[in-house]
Length: 264
Image (cartoon, rainbow, N blue to C red; front, side, top):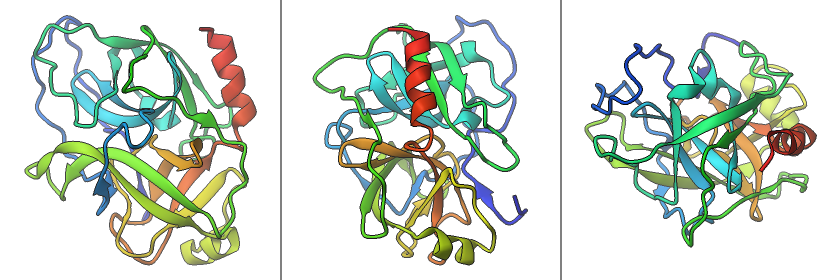
């Protein structure tokens, strides 16, 4: 990957070890807006399948619920991190901020990473995870694994959590979305100046609405199906080049198998 590319990472820092029961808020990390110039939306309006993925008290990534106990996200969300440090929040639109309260954390019990995953080339950036307690309520929904091929005439919805602005002094994190068009692969390759593997989807609005740092693992949705996983962008807020997503349809067999192997 060329040096000019802006990956959409989780927080690429090692969090110092501390006792698991300690709930004191850690200093906030440097963070960029997630859906750059996106609009606010309620999780319910999105279908209730969006979940917040925390490492200790830091919101790192977005996930998409597939079942009450399984969700889909980007593999690099877990790169260099301890599984025991993760927990998820579902059914909320605003970023969860109750870490100083005595709540029961819904921790991860298993994660399956695509065997194709190569961080340097961002191939197979797909992970399926299982949580300790099932998420079920009137505020919760589940996405179907994508079966639909996507064409340049299709408009898709991309969503994720983040601050509304370029720094954390902006408004509190809330779910945001953007509707963008699928970009033909040959056009995408020409605009990005590189050949692309078959496991990706290109999409973009060319109007300053893009993915940005921290938007890792968020869904690209089409007809109530999760068809893509937010992976990387050329530059936050640019109007010249599309964003890149992992194709869920391409990895559907791995995803379905992983859910089955981890069990209900």
